[in-house]
Image (tube, rainbow, N blue to C red; front, side, top):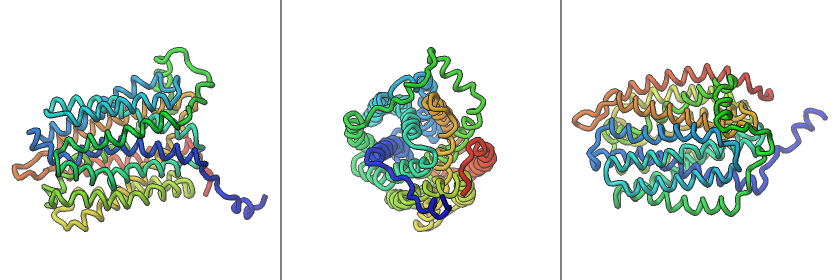
Length: 413
């Protein structure tokens, strides 16, 4: 076959059911991400209402991550022993319970407990969804799959955050959690009724002991670099995002009413960025795309953490480009790391990865809360120091990703 003939062969398209699965996974991610992200814009309301400090708010954010980390380790031994659809439903039901408790919380202690429950279940869902995507789609199409699923992040900004802020401004900060619950319930029913079992991995040889399955997964040297990377990659999000709205209002000087506009425009841009980055990852190489995103992230984090008083349009532009950089790191890195584990250990690998990611995120949020000091006028001091930490970790992750991508050779483009 000539090169011209090979180029003429159309790329494999997604079947109707594959499109359905990707859509369902994206919608689930939408609700999970929205539940986590909504804490950030509500922070400006929660601090005075609950009479808490930035350190306590950081602890509330961290509690979700730490409980998700514990849950990931506890579930890893069993992650490959059940139909992945059933696991998805189990943890999604628990996530909805935690979201309900958040909506009912009236004190800081109640909120802390609610976030712990939500993290115990919600923090594992992403790993199960990733295992499903890895089982159903080959590596050469995973960039596009991850790109589509990543639009959940964008949708949470375009639809979720502005709506959540609207509900919070017209009622109080509890309302967005009830709204999340209302959209999560139908999604759970759709999975129950229409998703097929994902159980091909059960035909493979299984270890007798769940504990040994977990130990062998954690002790596998081939996985260690990937585990280290999943701890480093979310540092920026956990450090900068929880204090984003407080920074915009009290440091940059914009009004609370401007926040929905920032999230809306940024979210709309990422709706297009996610799929484009996914296609670029499959077409031009996942590591190259990751490097592009890392360089862009370095530049924009430096600008964002030193931005000072600027107009709304400048804040929106910086956010749009910053999230383009974040997506250009997140999507190709997920696709690359999904190729590391063998099928019989994908569930455990993803569960451990999610656990380590959440624990590292909890530490990052806790460190951010410790570094940040709120001045008497409400402004956040030392925000620039968080930027230096994030940029340093980004440089380290670039070097480590170079080593990892050598373990997953891609076709030359």
